[in-house]
Length: 107
Length: 122
Image (cartoon, rainbow over all chains, first blue to last red; front, top):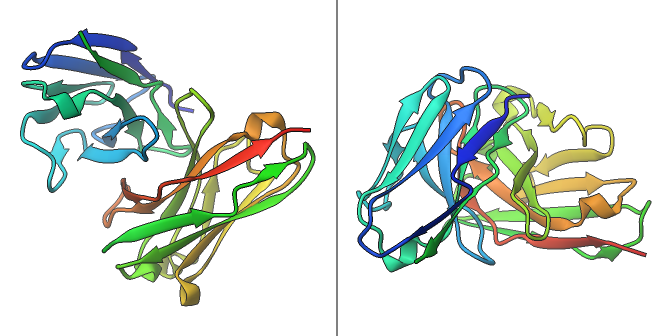
């Protein structure tokens, strides 16, 4: 199975900050990586597919980059609604796997 | 409105069985791959399995640890997805989400239901 390791696992930041979350894959996955946002008690929401393709309706302050084994999610200027947990997901091969999550909290 | 609604979650004893359902609306269900994803209390997301569409022979994929106990099926005539869970253990306690696969490989999960809670306890 392909393991995804996110760093950091916890991030404290302020509104307006630029934050970066890294996802590392245990083997190359090309660009078959998605990023999801989950708020407490809610279902996950797809933000980015194919490592860097922003989904319709997702604010442009979110961006993704990377390929093979290292990927990054950047939020350029944190808004109050961005405080949530973020997960990366690989679909390069089965079983589909998720990273352990990065919890983004207000400083 | 594109929507997925899960149901069937319940309190069940260890060793028991449960069948979850997910009803889709607002899109052509039969065209899409569908997934189940679960989340244990306070934990991260865990993919359970996937069923492809008719054009891909309704083939399925599962997390290896669940393959022998869980079965995914669908009824396109009823816009419904199912998850049959057998020999449940306390480790299966989780919120179970169904999710739609986006068109185009590798089918990211672009629409999610609100989830249904399964508790396995004596």
